[in-house]
Length: 606
Image (cartoon, rainbow, N blue to C red; front, side, top):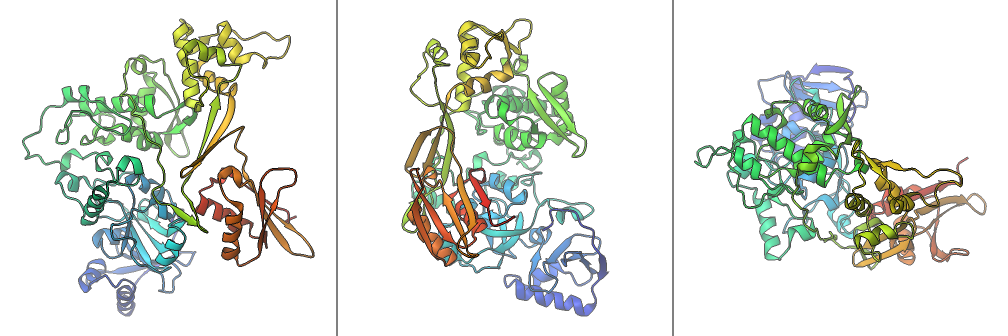
C-alpha cells in the first residue's frame, strides 16, 4: 500500500470532537488496547494531524513526530496501527511469528505473509476471522515488523492445509510510510536495512520471549531436529550482537585480533571451538572480519550464475550469513563506514569488479577475480553436507497428501565429456548439478595445469578438453579454438552434458530426461459463447489429474472432467468457465508450482 512515494493532498489538525471519535474507534478496533495504551499512542496534550492521500487513505500522526494510525478506505472501518505505534505498544495486535529472521526479508520486500513462513505455536494456530488486523514479529524480537489483515479464517486455513496467503500486508518496516518521517528510526539493533533478526540485547542477557522458549522446548521434547525440518529457529545463526549492547561487566572482554585470525567461518556462520560472544572488536578487527566473510562467501555461496549482484544482496544474503555469531559485523563501525566504499576498495584491489547504478545509487558486483592472490590463498571452511529439506507440514488435497515441490535441473555425462570424467576417475553413472559439473571441468584444468601462465583468466585447451567443449559444435572448415576464458568454461561444459530434471514432492521423486516442460493452462470458447479452461502437463509435477479435477469442482462450483491427451501420455483437466487466472494461482499456492513453470493462453481474447 505504501510501496511508492505519494504526496498527501492535504493535512490538518484534528478538532476535539474528531480526536475523541478517533480514540473511540481505536478502542473498538483494538480490544487489546487499554486506556493507558491509547493515551500513549494519542497523548492528550499534543496535536493530532490527519493527512489525506489521493487513494483515499488517511494517515493520523503526532504533529512533528511520526504516523500512528492509517485508515485504508477513509471510512473508519479499516484502521491499522503503524509500526511506530506497535513499537510503542507491541501487544496492541495479535501477532504471527515468522519461522526465522531470514523470512522477514520477503515481508520487508513487500510480499504478503504466507502460511508456510509462519512458526506454529505449541498450542496450534489461534482462532482468527477474515479481515482481522494482525502484526508480524520475528522470534526473539518484541518489535513488530509489519501489519496487515487476515486473508481467511483459521478454520479455512486448516482446510486449505495451511497453504496460501495468511496476511495481506498493508504496511511494513522500511516502506514509504515508515520513511515519511523526518528521522525514521528502528526500535532495536535487530533491525537491519533489509532483514530483521532477534534483538541482541535480549540474546545478550540470555532472555527470550516466552512464546519462542515454549516453541523451542516443545520441539526438543518432540525430538525435532532444527536442521532437518528447516522450520525451527536457530538462534545461533541469528544476527550478530552489537558490541555496544554486550555485557561489559562480564569480565570476559579480551583482545580479539588473534581470535579473528583463528575463526573458522562456515556457510551458516558457525564457529568451531571458539567462544567469542562477549568479544569487542576494534576498527582494524572489523575490517579484517569483513574481508574474511567476503572471501568465505565468494568461495561458498556466490556463484558465477548469480552475477551481477547488487551490493545489498551480497551483504545480506552472503556476507552476513558467513559471519561468526557473537561478533558485530556493522559496516558503519569499520574504517569504510559505507558498504559502497568498502566494495570499491575491494574492486581497487582487483578482487571484484564493481559498477555503480547512478539511478539507484547502489554498487553492483559484476564479476569476481577468482585468480586473485587473496582468493586463492584463502582456505574456506569445508561445507558440511546438508540434508534435503522436506516440508514438515503435509498438505491434504482431496485425500492426497502432498508437500512442498522441489525442482532441480541435473545433468548426466555424455559421450562428449566422458573422457574428462574418466581422466578424473569421476562417476559417470550419477547425475550432477550445474555447479558440480563445472567443478569437474575445473578439476581437470587444475590437474592438467591448463591455466595460461601469462593470463590466469584464460585456459589453454588440450585435445581432450577441446573435444569435450567443441567437437561437433564447430562448423566444418572452421578452426577449433586453442583457448577459452575461464568464465565460459562452466556453462560450455554443462551444455555438452545430457540435461535431466528431478521433481520431488514429499517421498515421491522422479528423474526424467530433458528440460522440465511447464504446465499449460488454456481458455477457449466452445459451443455458443461458453468458455472452457484446460490444464495439461500435471504428471511432470507429480500432480494427480483426478484429484485436481475434484478440487477444482468444489473450488469453482463448476463441472470438471479429465480426458486423455491425444497422441500423448497423460491426462488433461477440463474446467467449465474462464478460470485461467484462478487456476494458475491454485497451482502456485496449493501445489507450489513455480511461476516460470506455468504457461497461460487465453484464446478468448483478441
